[in-house]
Amino acid sequence: MSVDWQVLDQHAGADLLRADHSLDHSPLFCDASLAALLDAYPRERLGVWTFGDHGEGEDRPVRGTADGLSGEDILAAVRNGRIWLNLRATNDLVADYSGLANSIYDSLQARIGQRAIKRDMSVLISSPGIHVHYHLDIPLVALLQIRGTKTLHVYPAADPFAPTERLEAIALSEGDESLVFQETFEASATTFELSPGMGLSWPQNAPHRVQNGDMMNVSLSCEFMTWPALLRANALYANGRLRRSFGARPGRPGGVVPATLGKAALARVFKKLHRSEDTSPTPASFVLDLSRPTCTRPLSA
Image (cartoon, rainbow, N blue to C red; front, side, top):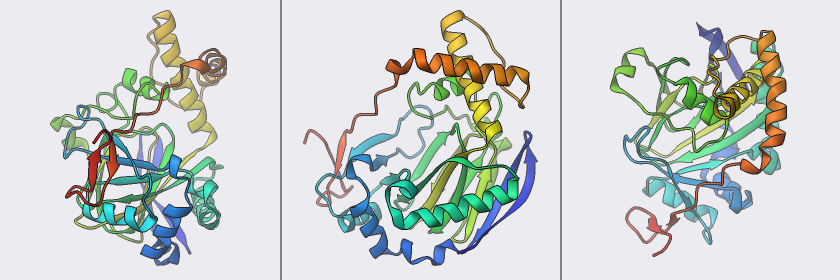
């Protein structure tokens, strides 16, 4: 399986990369393999979510469970409902996928000339037409399309698209990664139509939203860090603590300068002091249920 990355554009000091790959031909992503993956993956770690149509920043993602269902049942719910499955760290938890992940990250390293650390490859399996709301990620991300089509809208990693204080809150794990979307942002979006055999990696913290085509989608979301990206993430964390604890008004971290290194070191101190303040996971509020038209029922029903 091959993955070839090309630079598309320079954006906010970081490369916007496109991939051409052959991962969509792998037998690991046929229906039978996906069902087997869902059976092998630790069920308590399976991310089961649904989203409203277009409620960016207002309607939060809703978490569910798939207890008692087989992998085939879960796939059927995805095909017929409005479900988004996230199998985080599949490369660490299911051995058959680790070699594939290594080939992706090694290809990224070769392109960007820096080590890809903190590797977390998620398999995403999602329903026809589902819309993933406007949000950002703290790590770097590469998204590779395996099955189906999706439209990806990427926005500048700057104010007002990703307000500095909201970016710090996400770095501090204060709630989820959602952002408030404004229609005026659309003029600044870069839009990509992804089909099987294509992929994209965008600048760190760039907001984005995703619209599936009218078919079940399978994608790989490959989160990673480089050392500069990790230093910047830690500087964001330190800035958030300084703002909350001392009333500071820090600026947004840019490149790796002495101040970034100092903030990263300070983040280590803050993280030791605030270990007990980790955010609790979003409680589940629905269960996958194939007998319902939406394939979901309220958890209390």
